[in-house]
Length: 417
Image (cartoon, rainbow, N blue to C red):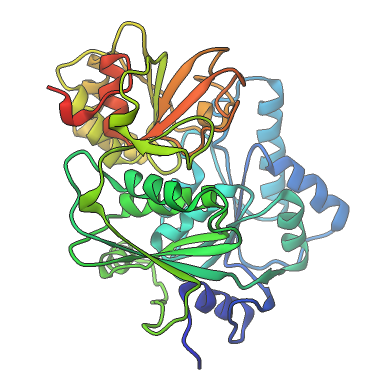
């Protein structure tokens, strides 16, 4: 057998034969999941293609997370339709409030290392946090896979990223991925896999890995995979889940390689209107804000809430700024309560929202009006992403968000007293 990358190994397993980059293969995913916004379209197309039960035999999950609680009649009826769809296909339906799908399915061990996963959402790449290959697909392709039991893929080339060093103060994995996006651009990984390796001195927690893999799609990547560590495999053993230990070969062939010493980084900020329009925070200090939004499918983790509370403890959000905090799952919310983090945030006058995609996707609970400026630890800042096309969104890590909420303007946490 020739040497292989993570993507090549996972697609080989799912296709039932050895495959390499550039080949076209038919493969059956281990897991398919959809949500309450694009799910109804998946259902409509599925019904047109298939009158009975489809040929897909893997796990199928539907998560109510994008508009929770439902904000209008249409969003409520979408959920009703998804409940019916789950019953018809014997899928698991996860009710609203349990969590944002990408974080939640990792947390519950539904997403496992070495799996091929399809999702009706571009941020399905977040599955790569635990060494799975998560691919976002449109509703028609998801419906076709449910009906036919498989789909075709071109095996992507892989770009290797080696991360080394120790985090400077107030620098996190969010800054790593923003810096990489600034280097390679939003088209820099088109239809390729971004594969992350821990080099000398680098230890990546699961929360770090969620943040890294999540934004690979902003570079056009087909998938973003963090090579799983012993700690990741041990996590699954601890929760009683059997997983395959799939790792890249040491002599695997890569399209390119980039090495990054995180010790050289300062906190990063992506300016409107693109996630790759990245500079150090020192270059954009002083921009006044109307809203700060913390929490999404990659950066609503317990680590993020701890970072926010570390800065906000004993301080107050600026009178002009609304601070919205979204724990990514109910379990994260509960742990934050137990640790006293939620009280710190509330005392600082933050608003705590339920687990939802909310304003991150420009849907509800914090959308922006014309001319408003927001700073967020979410993943996209395209024109109109969080509301009015005349609004502006800056992206950063949680430390910068929390500091800026207090100051009322984009601020450097290294200078905050």
